[in-house]
Length: 432
Image (tube, rainbow, N blue to C red; front, top):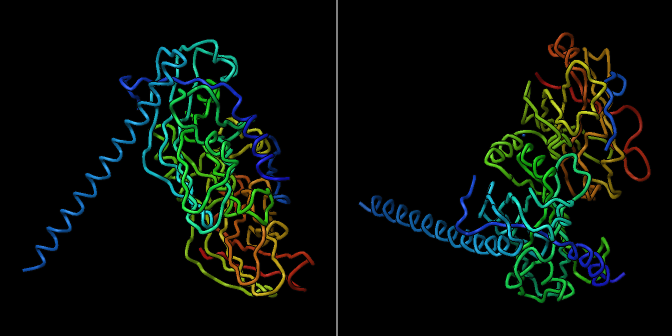
């Protein structure tokens, strides 16, 4: 299927939803379900002149940055003021805003999230209620500004259907029409008019308003952050994996002032699904990083980078997955690196591991339900990729029996034809 046809269909669907939002420039800104088992069996001079010049340069840089932030903020204020008037909203508050650009390189296409604001709307026209699950009393909008640029020498195609989601969400939130005034460039609409085509050196910049119903907004505020999906680019108008330029990227965005702290804390943990999908709260119990022990496994090398033991408390949405855990949950997450020295592709999702506990008297299988989804599940010849493994077990057993005893991690890699080697798996003894 040609990309422009598919894009037109999807984009038309996404764009035909009516959206509501309001925010005056002078308004006050304020700041599924599979379960995880707990059973053992399944179970990150001229010196002064130079200094003066450096300080001057730094000061100029800060002033330039501050000036840019003010300019961007003023542009958002104008867009929000138009939304407020358009939907006749009584009040719009800015819950959180960031004007710090985030750049995503997709081969010779660069996608920039130039800035965003999370808005809370109160009391707007009933005409727009359908965009907020039939409620015009209380809702939200995440207003984002994007720029996509073709930096290469050949045409590129960008079919921008961005999605917004959060842990436990049963639907995604996307671009809606008619929320912004006609004088504001809608990013998706601009690309749709061009059939997604970007000539060499060409850029497209515009806004996307993600409409959010009140219940979902409350959940986002409780979680303090949302996940935005940045689509990949293509080198032709046909939607095929071989035509991709880069991969889909998921980025966490704080939506309240507390979200900055949540994001910073999240960055300290290895990327299992509990962390990546914001499934709950982790508290570090024990970790060992920079182990860097490498063992050969057939035509591959496996390196144990480090491990973390964390106490995990799932959020309200995710709690049913962990109903078997009556005495608390401990996760052991290991970061490994697979380097493929052979000709055949190694498939991490087909590979497995076992955590030996209680001085090797018991074992726990890796939890597939807690592995973060990867879009490109293969390690080709000469490549090296991180491989995360995670194990869930009962906290009471860990505290009373296991935590002071030895742990070891047994690994089995696989490729399309089967295991990479015959005989015993390789085993890493976890250093204390």
